[in-house]
Length: 158
Image 1 (cartoon, rainbow, N blue to C red):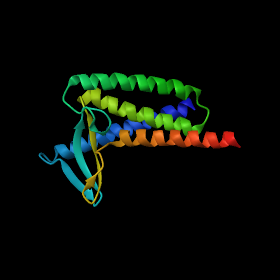
Image 2: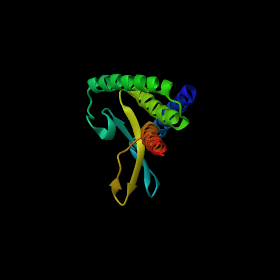
Image 3: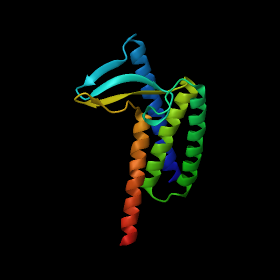
Image 4: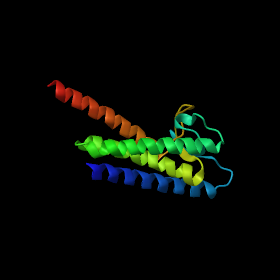
């Protein structure tokens, strides 16, 4: 299962970085534009997140990048230890998604000083937080962890 989880992590981290390179090139070709409508419910909106999830602590201090990078490294190390002990495919995939997402955002913090966010989903004037593929992978991974836990609990009850 270690290989499956690490393969998922590698796929997510690479896809995340490629998507960010694409979005940065897209906006570099359109100086001054920060939002590009794609569909009635989706904009591409270039934002720089120097904080953590949902824009918390989003300021220009370099200390944020250092703190969040160290925290992510500790979390990834713990997840790799957990992944080595996993026997179920769904949980290995889930952990891999979280690791890959965390690594994708850490690369941004180290390379760019901030995380590139660009997916802006909205409904009738209400906008969800702008996020990226790494954030989506982390969210799906955590959701799969919860699902795996519920399935294990149901199996143990039978």
